[in-house]
Image (tube, rainbow, N blue to C red; front, side, top):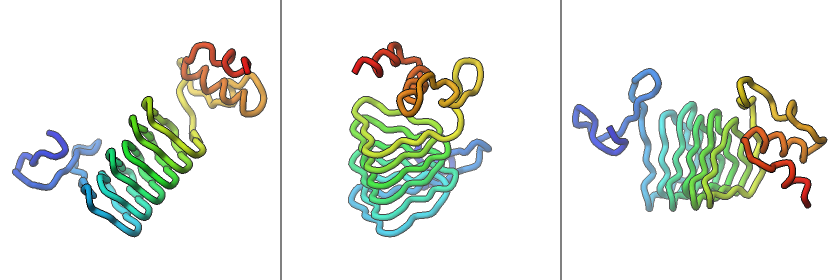
Length: 171
């Protein structure tokens, strides 16, 4: 079932299954819709229009479509950004920045995916631990240098980027 097709019972409302198989509501702020204020909900929120306020989607997903704008903070388990966010993003699981997306604010998440052309104008804070090799390590355990450069090298080496150390020390 796709997100926007009618359900099995012909319902015109869109629901997504959660991990238990239960229906999760989908809220859509369509193109041309402007919301002012704080939106607190669960499930999935798709922003195609404009939000001037905070989005708090407990345990759910925020999807900002291309052309969608959020001027406020975003809190969710998963945030997928294809449009623009002017505020901080806090995601419990993952932030995905699609091609053409822009975030003007800080991002806090344990995992992030940035496609070519996605942009962050703020600070990225990786929370928790990340898997490297066969075990779990924190970036500071792999830092071979001191301070920010050592942490950056550890993060780049942990991502398997060849020549990360040489690129950092070449300047």
